[in-house]
Length: 127
Length: 108
Image (cartoon, rainbow over all chains, first blue to last red; front, side):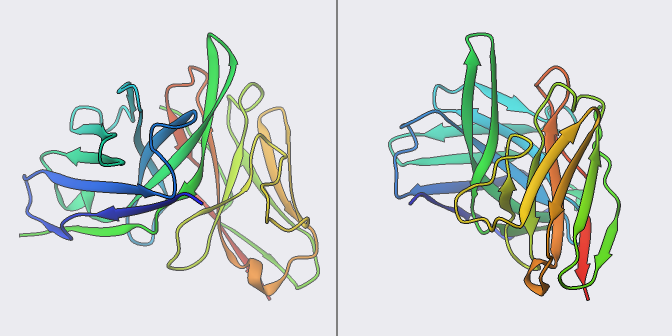
């Protein structure tokens, strides 16, 4: 059974870059049709989709964060990573990684949804 | 931008039916997904593709979608179902994925 585990610094200074890694165990990150996603949740608030990556390297980002976000994948380590630049206190949140199942309906239409999540890691932006 | 609108809270007595709605302009053409999040835990998928239930999710959880409204129904709600529930879907372009604001279900 696939499991995901987030890791990275719990404290980041304002204006710096937040970097997190998600390690996939129990299966290969390259097998099957999956996207690999990042989601965040400020304390007491709702979920926000950050973006996703396919193992081919193609990415999709939330437009509200696109200028500051980068998601990459390292298939040799079975990991994918998130970088969020120029952080502020508003980026303080629990960050989750998740697996997206991709369903291909036609060559031009596909959709996906998250079926396995990591437990989340808390990142605080503070000096 | 695109928004999915949920009621902030729903309350039911144990054994009653809880219905949580999610409104979005693209829902007539896009699937809705529902996640359950208990306090301090990661979200868990309870309904996918409007009405399908993942393995291991109790039969009392069901979903439906009509027009711009998707609905999560919990028939015979139990105390263990107390949680925040989030709908999830995409805009008409399929490029922006969003969560609804979440609905806190209280069973008392």
